[in-house]
Length: 206
Image 1 (cartoon, rainbow, N blue to C red):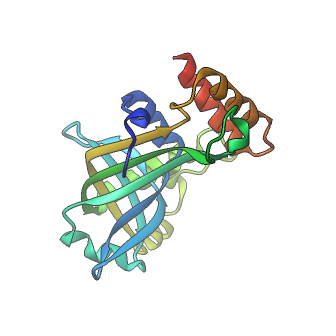
Image 2: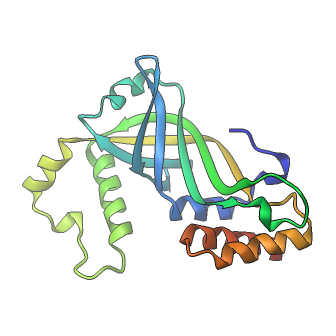
């Protein structure tokens, strides 16, 4: 992805937090010579060697997994809040634009099975059931039911090789216009606009 130098985002702890909060991502690879995308949740973790990985799963009916053995590298896109920025908010003539946060991860993919797949499923369910009433756990489900469901899944692990992150948040604007953009976004009835305003304020205060 193209990243303007002003928008380059390299704070590792912020990026980790962003991935964890925006874990429903897009997996992109080649299938029969064409780009193929699947939308699925990922879990950021470390393998036994302490290397950063993503693990997830997709439906066995999805043909994307059949090409993974031939893939040297895949791309996973995590997208966060984004907002339209009207040029009417500036004190000078300019064009509208869009503010956003996004992380692209490139890595080597492999299929996981058996205990590795079960670890993934338990971790994913435990993470999203945390704090919910009547919490569900894989361990409390009947073994025959779990076994039947697992047969319909393909587990994957992606060893992270490269991370590209962009936080395009009006860094090219002067103090007056920057504050006005934040103010206009905070007035918006849209939750994403307000989230972008919060990200802009957080970065301005750092």
